[in-house]
Amino acid sequence: MSSYENILFEKKNQLAYVAINRPTKLNALNRAVMRELDDVFAKISEDEEVRAVILTGAGEKAFVAGADVGELATQSSVEGKEFSLWGQRILNRIETLGKPVIAAINGYALGGGCELAMACTLRIASENARLGQPEVKLGIMAGYGGTQRLPRLVGKGMAMQLLLTGEQISGTEAYLIGLVNKVVPYAELIPTAEKVAQAMIANAPLALKYSMEAVNRGLEGTQEDGLFLEATLFGLCCTTDDKKEGTQAFLEKRPAQFKGK
Ligand code: COA
Image (cartoon, rainbow, N blue to C red; front, side, top):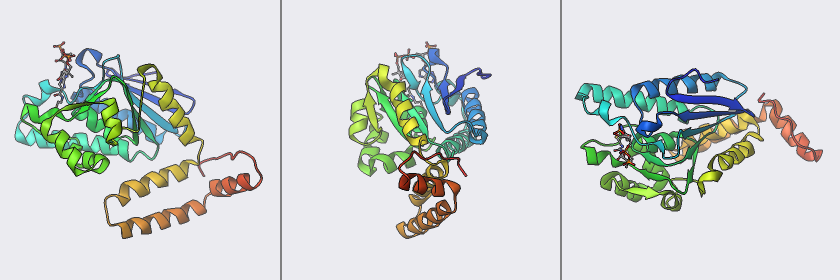
C-alpha cells in the first residue's frame, strides 16, 4: 500500500502505521524522507478512516539517528536556516495533526530523531532505545524544535543538560525524566503503542482534537488565555452529536458509538 521510497505506510483498524525506512543509514532524515513524511501526514490529516498514527523506524536499530549529516555538512548559513524552518514546519504538521501520533521509539532517536519523537503526541520507547540531542558534537545545535519542545517536556535543567552535553540516555532514563511516557521490552513496543492508540480512539474524535489543541495552544500563552480557550473548546464540544451520544450512553449504561460529529 506504500507508494513511498523512504517510508513504509499502511492502514489497519483505524490506525496508520508510518515507518521511516532507511535502515542502512539508521533512518537518518534526508530531504527525500522529510518530503515523504510531509506528504504522508498531509494525507493522513484528510483521511477520515485514520483515527491515530504510530510512527516508528524500520529495522531493529533505530527510530531515527538524526538529520542526514552528509546533507548538513555542505549547508551554507542561508540554506541552514531554510532547512531548519522547513523541518520545523513538517514537525509542526505532526504536532497539530488533530489526531494522536504515537512515536514508537525502537532504537536510536538522536538529534532530529529525538525532535521528531517530541513533535508526536506521546512517546513509547523500547528498552534498547537511546535518546539525545548530539548536534553540539557536530558544531551545530538542535534545529527541528529541540530547544523548544525538550524544555517543555522535561524542564529547563534537564533540557540544558541534554542539549549541551549531547549525551545519549536510555529508554528508562528518558522515562524517568518524562521524555517518554512508557518504556517496554522491544517485542512489546508496537503492541503497546496499538493498545494506547486504541484506548484513545475509543473516545470521541472531536473531544480528542480539541483536547490536543487546548494543550498545545495553551502551553504557548498565559494560563488565563489557556483557560479561556479551554472553556471555548469545551463549549464547542457541548454542541456535538458525540457529546449527546456520550452522555446518553453513560446514563443508559451502554457503550457510546461516536461519529466524530
Ligand atoms: N546521518 C547520516 N548517516 C548516518 C547518520 C546520520 N545522522 N547516523 C548514522 N548514519 C549512517 C552511518 O554513516 C553508517 O553509514 P555507512 O554504513 O554508509 O557508513 C550507518 O548509518 C550506520 O551507522 P554507524 O555509525 O556505522 O552505526 P553505529 O552503530 O556504529 O553507531 C550511532 C550508531 C547512532 C551512534 C552513530 O551512527 C551516530 O553517532 N550517528 C550520528 C548521530 C547524530 O549525530 N545525529 C544528529 C545529527 S544532527
